[in-house]
Image (cartoon, rainbow, N blue to C red; front, side):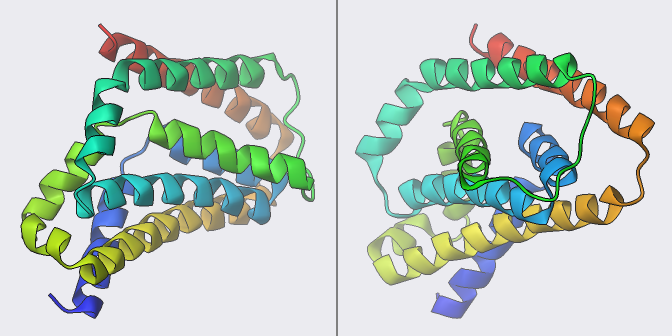
Amino acid sequence: MTFYLALLKGFILGVSVAAPVGPISVLIFTRTLKFGFLGGIFSASGAALADAFYAAVAAFGLTLIATFLVEMQTQIRAIGAAILLILGVLALRKKHFETKSGEGKRGLLQGFGVTFLLTLSNPMTILLFATLFAGLSLAEIQAAHATAGFLVAGTFLGTFTWMVGICTGAFYLRAKVTEKMLKNLNKVSGVLFFGFAGYLIFKLF
């Protein structure tokens, strides 16, 4: 497999993993509406980096790390559920959805950290990437570290590109939505976060 082909296939896999609507998409959308494009981009970077990490574990055959993360999936999912519950409470408690021109360095890093941890809260993503890579001759990929590196880079770019698309859409809508719509979005996002948290809690048992 050539490096460019590995990059392209990784890109396609990254998009396919990021495309399903979930808490990350909702969080990036709402943060872009509230803090602007840069706030959304930092959040998108966290999600893309976490997906790239799991892709690297699968592509490089890091079985020790993969086994540990899968064995700890209950605890990791519990942390993810707790984060979602906190986000849900914060969203529902806010009576106003104020848009800001930007946020400070601390806020940007917090946005990055939250999406990074939330994306990591599903260790089964490793098995998903392993399954997807199996169709691309996983053993061959693991034997060629350069090919694996390009595949992981492509995965990051694919996930990040999809998330940037969400940021772009939210930023475009930012100037068009009314205050009432923003308040309703607060409520909807809060309910969605609770729903996603409930799903993770259900998966614990």
